[in-house]
Image 1 (cartoon, helix red, strand yellow):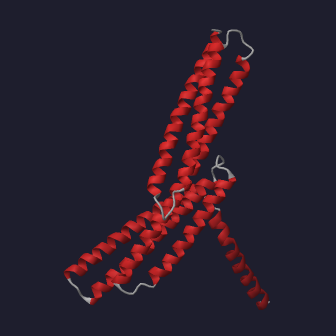
Image 2: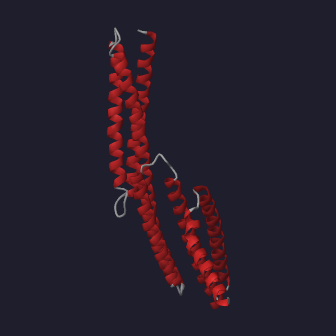
Image 3: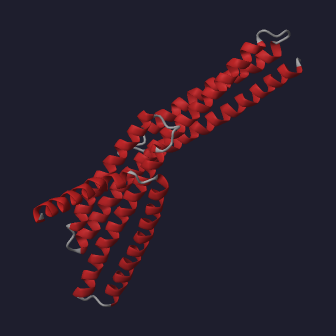
Length: 263
């Protein structure tokens, strides 16, 4: 009986361990966002504790105060890594729960998130190995470099999501233009209507070209390179594409108005 009881407890513990990852995976984007806010607050508090320790050491350069600077510095770096990790998980889940984002783009974003999560684990090991203030500074600089890599990944993926959304808007305009043209071709005195539709079609074509240019720029948001410039270029192309689509929408509305009035 005792042996059976021990086996049952062991089985129960095993089941709990197996279920634990499922609970993490089941985290929703809203819950992950709250965890990021909590981690962000903890990071702010850890940074303040580190600043206080440095002020205390500046007033009294004892070995004890020096060790406090190192310890609080390590805690601050760990808290910063926790914050970034929580932010990555939130953004990943936010994308995963968005039905408007295609699966291939979700997979690309997931791969970048996984890559950065591995970097965070490696940096945690570096922080654990810090023994003096020089090493603390070196790890901090390494974290800054990794942070810029992470930001470039996020910026690139954000650009790809915007490109996908812009293409969907262009698809909608193109579909509307096609339907209006099919209806207009059977109408008498349709020259003005078709002219408006031709102008709309030209604007949609220009929008497509600018969206493609934006995607090419976002693809180059990488380190090494000029990620900030490429990201800005991509944004500019999308702004131009937006203007093209607004113009196309205006011409489509004018064409529809002519059709309704029978002009």
